[in-house]
Image 1 (cartoon, rainbow over the protein chains, first blue to last red):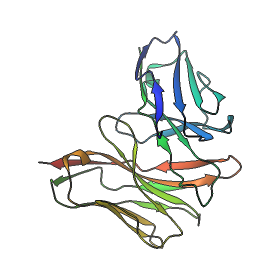
Image 2: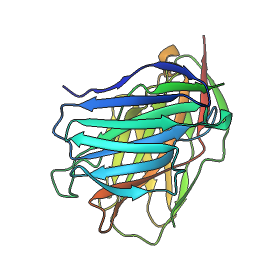
Image 3: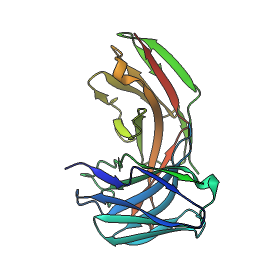
Image 4: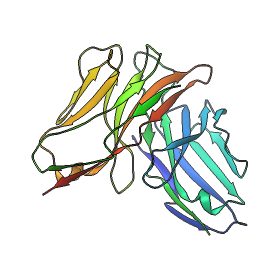
Length: 117
Length: 118
């Protein structure tokens, strides 16, 4: 199984809503990532979890709250978002640590398309 | 900080022809990976090919091959016998291990939109 599964595929929310994005992988990867991608732009890193602990937060506003309940799951909780937060949110996972048998590849999900009204 | 530059925002190629996408990067690291990822309109980012920096031999994956010039910090992608399914955004990416974080830092270029014309 080389899949990263993201739900929902599409989400529309108002600025006062609270919603969550979910990501799941069963490849035994211990690093999981959230990326934000605006139209016609490359993905931008938001958060990284390594061994279920938050290791990188790229100065993301607190209205985005990540959570890693276990080694297979990654959530992104959304609250009081702004219209400019509308984007494709990509989840990815990878092996760690760096080593001879590690390909270094990030496996991406299909993304969750978020629209904030 | 690492930078990845893709100087061709858009390219087109006739079906069955060959096309080369260019990528340059800037780093002071010696141990890193380079990737080409493909993102079709269906939006899932898919790995096309990878290259370890310590390997001199250029990576090849079926119709896809790279020209890796480490000294010049250049990493171009050649697609042979182009197919309609190759139509996508192609991102060149640089990866290094992020020290102390137990994870990787993947830096993307801005992408090249490739259209394969029937």
